[in-house]
Length: 176
Image (tube, rainbow, N blue to C red; front, side):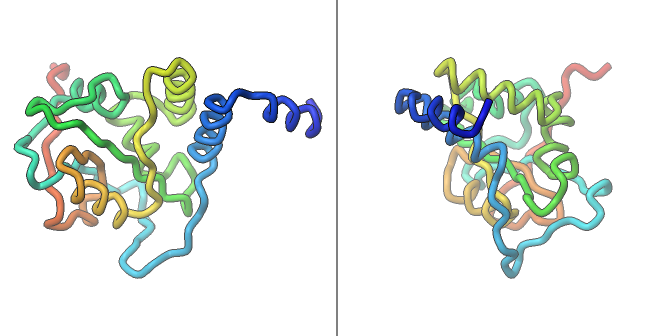
């Protein structure tokens, strides 16, 4: 398919579909922002420990793996206390995708590699059944997102956690 044919096909899309295509492009190719003071890109990614964080006002101290998956995959929209859940991802555009926190979190907690996760969200968007979590390139932005919203949910490298958020335990009830 040539560039002109592609441009014509995109131009012919209805407005809702065009917005979905734009969202998919943003998810697939996030911009690489300049580093700011206080932001860190982990040098030793393989030793990074990710933790799940929530807003400090959230009464949760732990979450089951199954519930965490439902919240991050848009299958459940509310916390048990009735607050709307507002999850976010950490993409780290300066790293190869398989080494990002997002890829590691998706594999470990959602049991999905990035290709499978992106395909999942494409299906959810085009079927009108949901939209993916917000994606942030910096740990400070994830902290701000979770700290600003009572329903905030995210994950961070443990060493990036501050007192602005609360770490909760993930309980895997399926383990023997």
